[in-house]
Length: 266
Image (cartoon, rainbow, N blue to C red; front, side, top):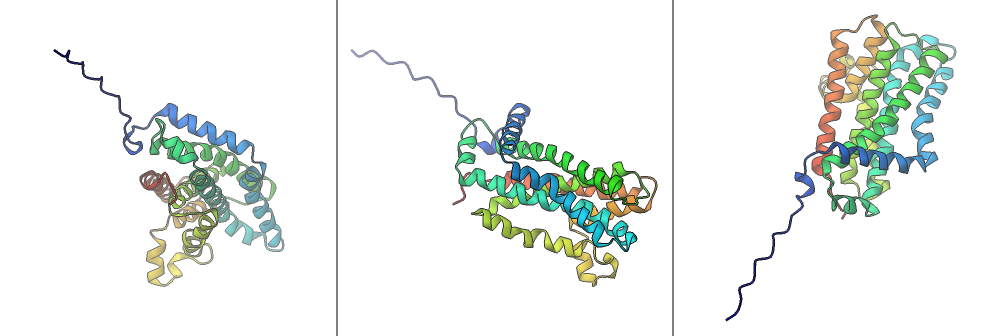
């Protein structure tokens, strides 16, 4: 008579990456890894920190004979430049993780998509704080940007714009198969917003169809928020609305980025 064998103990299964709950420890570990990698890439750090400052510096002296022109558009560009640079760097860095196989190895570990996206957002958000502080300080205290409101409100909107650029970069990287394709998304994602945000002409002077489109683009509210600081001494209800819309759009795009994140490019 054969002795019945005991059933093998059930193996603990790891939940799929999409269903793992967001973890603070995994998120901060991801952010620390990203920051450590960026610290070994001085060209990327220079792009993030210096390009907005250089562009503002050039803009100031392009309009050297017309300081009021710099005052009128400088605040708007103070929010636009960080958005563009963060979009470029984040989209390329995230895509590099996927094409190198790093992303697949990370998601095979106890690391959810939400942890990865939140970690990237946290890492680039820390860089965005430094970037926005440098650009705002340069514009207000060195280049003489004349603002009626508090420079701290300018810094807040610049930071929100940089975070929005990070979120957009994380989102579009899911649809690119190469770094070149990631850069190609810039004309599709950034340029229409740049043209319709009210930088070149007031949005209410546009064709009604274009004005309606501009009303749903987050960069429009970033420019509106900067203009509120430029013209009012106190924090207005319109400024609060604009800041909340930009922040809400950043959070929404981050959620979409987590939902569309793929392990492989192909």
